[in-house]
Amino acid sequence: MAEFLFEPILCDPTPARPRLRGGWRSMADIIPYPSNYTPPAASSMARRVNLLAQRVGFLPGTLGQQHTAIMGIVNVTPDSFSDGGQHADPDAAIAHGLALARAGADLLDVGGESTRPGAPPVDPQEEIRRVVPVIRGLAERGLLLSVDTRHAVVMEAALAAGARIINDVTALEGDPASVAVAARSGAPVILMHMRGPDPRTMQNDPSYGDVVTEVYRYLGNRVAVLEAAGIAKARLCVDPGIGFGKTPSHNLALLRHLQLLHGLGCAVLLGASRKRFISAVSADEPPQDRLGGSITAAITAFAAGVQIVRVHDVAETAQARAVWFATHA
Image 1 (cartoon, rainbow, N blue to C red):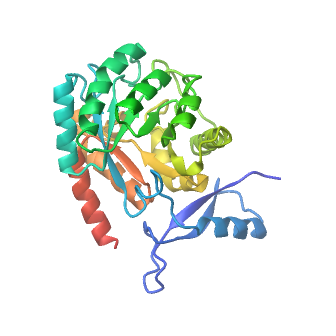
Image 2 (image 1 turned 45 degrees about the horizontal axis):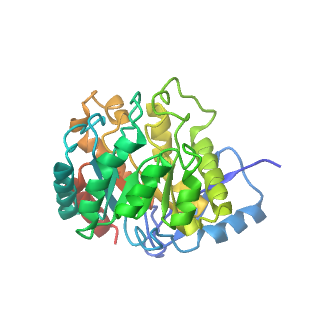
């Protein structure tokens, strides 16, 4: 029997307004993927029933359920691709995080190791030294925080300092101890797809038979593994990993089919802010000049029902979100 996936079509369920659109009230239809496969009618109806279920949220079930949440980026690093060194000092990073919260961020993602292509690894103890003072300072002010790390000891230290979410670019595969840390802590986890085990080599000629279905299946497998380890699906969020072991055409394909990831039954996060694919299809702009493309990617996420967008430009994204959801109410 042929294998197939279903991609939700998000639309307004009101009969008077039947046009296709991004909606938060219903998942009203499905299409097969790949598009050249037609499933049996009985299977189609079974999947239709599943997809009509209420949208899921995150942490533990409400973040992103009513509208897309904005995750502001706080890089405590000297070498991140867009803002490396700007907030390496703890006081500067805390001030930046507070500014992002005032600008409209619903949560902040604090990271102490750059995972840009070719970035050298950081010793976990150095990573702890960078992120813990920032996490503690922001948590003491009541902000919701995630820690962006692939090291179990950093996860533990960050959670102890006040972080509430683990965000791992290796989907808890990079460190053998990380699954146990996540299961024991009870913290929600963001699982990202990355081609290959190391950011230093992930862009070395990435290739896929079909990037959309391969990313979907990988994330589905990771969700199943973590559920078996005792981490409930309600605590999991999936991220297709834009720019992590992917060409511009791969990234665009994933953006076109973001809504497919809802079929995993988890919250979905998109991190496309200032990524290289934007300038690849535009005019080769540097990271700081990719705001227009970043906002377009965020709007694509709004239309696809994505629960969280991870961004550098919080105020501009919050404004775009306000207008988009007001016009789609």
